[in-house]
Length: 181
Image (tube, rainbow, N blue to C red):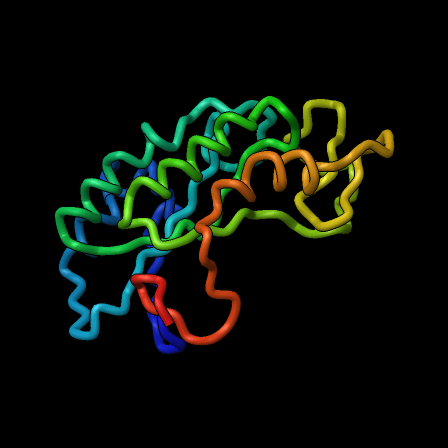
């Protein structure tokens, strides 16, 4: 993306699982979008819990299944997407779901990037939702569990997410939809 890139959201909270579904699906209108500079990506959110809100403990919706229809739509119309909100529960019960969504995006070039959703260090080890009672902290650097053990930054970021990141990252400067400077 460039400094003048457009990240266009959908309706229904931009949920990827609902992009092509319902009475007013995002896909019904946005396929008409024309960008002569090919510098538009869609803003997609995907929470893995029971109602896609990110407010429940259990993860039940595999992104590799729930994002299949939006991925097919992106391919058909030659669009790209950035998943700007990923949410899974704050505990060990959702580790495989987090790996699933990151690996899914890695396998689909339509997905050009992602961000995880968190409210920052004020949560500490007592995240207000989505914990499996062990209170593992957050993805914030230095986060600790309630018992002083390593938090999610160490256990999830380094053990799961870090190894799934592209080998070459653009940390500053102008990037494009293809990831180059």
